[in-house]
Figure 1 (cartoon, rainbow, N blue to C red):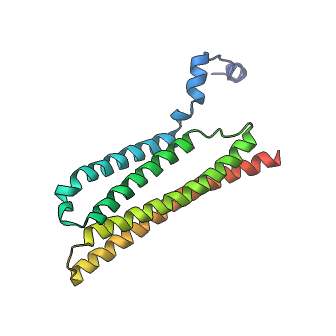
Figure 2 (cartoon, rainbow, N blue to C red):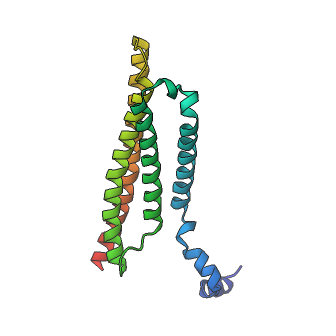
Figure 3 (cartoon, helix red, strand yellow):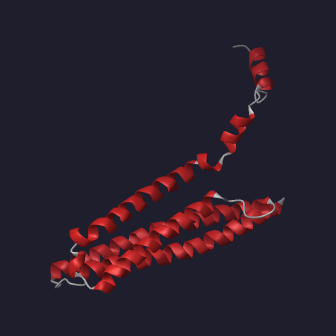
Length: 182
């Protein structure tokens, strides 16, 4: 390829036309890789937790546990799934204002609320799960070690979840600063 071909290709770059359908597919929010990851995470978590709700009573001796622990487990699992679904749809629909600046400002407020609600839901779910499984156990030193291990695992999971939400908030704050500088 000589320099003239290269110049000609450079000039023609970006001149190709796209159909309206192709443009819609390129700009569709559902195709964003982050949303695909969130959707996959949501489906896996909801499937796992729904399965847990169907098998906990027989599989984890729910019939031997107090009624309040069974009720609390069901409520917290449903609350956790509902919060995740709500969060997904809030992130999926970023347009929440009459212009880009308002949408970003509203999205930042939404993400801050979602961060708080997600943390509360996750903590309630973890506490409920620990209470459910430990309510009728006679603890020994090895069982205490397992409990401490579970608490540490949940703490690490909370940290990464919070870090993920914080990353989203930082991203939108950067966008807001860029638009305010214009």
